[in-house]
Amino acid sequence: MAKEIFGKKLKVVNIGVQTFYETLKQQGVEVVHVDWIPPAGGDVRLARLLKKLV
Amino acid sequence: MIEKGIVRKNEYHDSIVLMQISERIQRMEGVEKAAVVMATDNNKKLLENIDLLTDDVKGASPNDLVITISARDEKILSEAISKIDELLKKRVQVIAEMAAPKSLDSALEALSDANLVVVSVPGQFAGLEAKKALERNLNVFLFSDNVPLEDEIELKNLAIEKGLLLMGPDAGTAIINGVGLGFANVVNKGPIGVVGAAGTGIQEVTSIISKKLGISQAIGTGGRDLHERVGGIMMIEGIKALDDDKETKVIVVIAKSPTPKVQEKMLEVIKNCKKPVVVDFVGADVSAIGEVGVVPALTLEDAALKAIALAKGEELREVTFTATWDEIVSTAHVEYQKFISSQKYVRGLFSGGTFCNEAMLIMSRWLGKIYSNISAKPELKLDDPHLSREHTCVDMGADEFTVGRPHPMIDLSLRQLRLLKEARDPETAVIMLDIVLGYGAHQDPAGGLAPTIAEAKSIAQKEGRYLSVVASVCGTLGDSQNLEVQKKKLKEVGVIVMPSNAQAARIAALIVIRGQAKIKGD
Image (cartoon, rainbow over all chains, first blue to last red; front, side):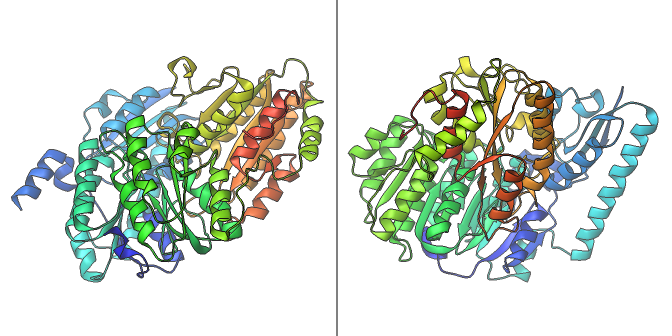
């Protein structure tokens, strides 16, 4: 059930906006930032297809 | 003016970084318009709306960076482009120094016991990233918008199947185990759990509760969770999770008025909760909510106060104004007695969509028609969101205002310009504002707006009018901007600062109608 996370220490992976990484750091949360770039040259359909193949 | 559109193939930067750069370029002398954005379909549409979609840019793909500028001459144009290059280079250096991993899987090598993923990449890719996280048994806070509805349904069903939380898409805020995600306020821990499909709505409710008690968890479901096809999947899951949570004693549910079918489904779930549930379906028929034994709330503030009373075992009462009626009448009188006869209208300039909606609902009772860029009634929709008409409330966080620039909670410039524009309108009587504090928001919004408010008042004064400005500040003493400091800065420039958005809307209406009604209870 979704409440499994309640009461546990949050450990976060941040994918996207760097500000959110910084505000989590400020709160003393263990967080790793991902230097994300669009997959498969920005082609969403191709990315989905590749994901299926993998 | 000359225009230029540049496409940089396969160059990606995050949206907030790009917005900050766009904003700096827009402020350069001689630059008329500028946007530095990823060429997503949505951004291209928005560029078209502000006449910046040049032919070069039309063919760009979503992973191409696009720079579009309209400037006075070639020299300014080239200076602007150099500045953009310099700022982008700086950002690339920062990321390189962090040695950040390139994917979720490599991040999980560094943090193998991660339990939550925050996703804020462009909408068309966000679903894929969220799905990857769910498949790896990780909870997700999905800030991105523009995620297709089908993807949202698929992701939410997958999350339920795996017993995970999927907050979003378009989740503005959440507080999980005391940690603020997205735009959240620093609140006390306590016995009240919140589930909401409205970002600033959750911020208002949690901030008010934090003054007296505290928050166990606040789960943002994303605005579309109560869409007929999504059917409130995550809201139902959130309510059940809070009902089972031993730290939570009272539950607050907030959403924009759902369709009757979804509302019925939600009320059925709420009715079966072991704990008291306060419901604010903004704009919904309260009697229907009360009939099933649930505690209906009239406003966000009302929801917060009722939840506090229930948690403390106190009697429920509705607060129209925190101050006495005599004090309110006297404050309003001081304002409207200085108006001249041409001043007839309220102009609400909001950074929070939920605040805009709530203010319209409250004020329309006394003011009648209120025009808006987000009005659900087609006849009250503004033809041009940049141009007010009679009574108007504008959600300045809506897409049409935020292309290539940060949200008004981060960047004050658009609201400052609009404030001055409204001040010049001889028909404006009252300007209503919301000031939102917390993580991610502007570091000193009241300090930034105060000189503009003073200038707006002085513009009106020079033309023989008095401009009344009413505001509420959403935030806490724990926020880095500090609630009291922010309120003081507004009061110093003559703003009437009210304890909530609802109270601000009521006094704004009372001032506009020159005290000709008793606003005691809704």
